[in-house]
Amino acid sequence: MNDWLELDFPRATPAIRVEDRITDEEYVLRAELPGLDPEKDLQITVAHGVLTVKAERREEQKGLHRTEFRYGMLHRSVRLPANADESGIKATYRKGIIEVAVPLTAPEPAGRQIEITKAE
Image (cartoon, rainbow, N blue to C red; front, side, top):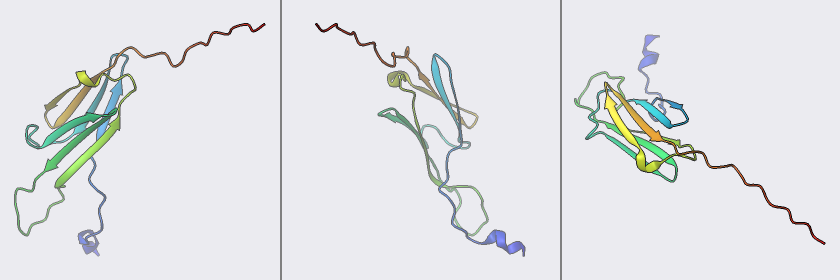
């Protein structure tokens, strides 16, 4: 009966777990990515208002052994707020957490008032 855990069920693509917060000044995304080298294994891109975090975890040992670690490519994309300043994005990696800070500009008005002219 305990062997059912050993069956090779299809697994979902590994996702990067994230948390985020937003203030009037910035949007911050934090992602859990322990054990990676940020210079070799991580890539952060932004295009068209979408921030993408990509990571690759390589298997160090080959052969017959049991592992529940996830290896391969991982990625996560999030839509940035409309007033994100993409040119000012900064990222830091510390103790297995990547933190991406996106500065926000002053919000643009949602619309404008239309002047009404009196027709005669």
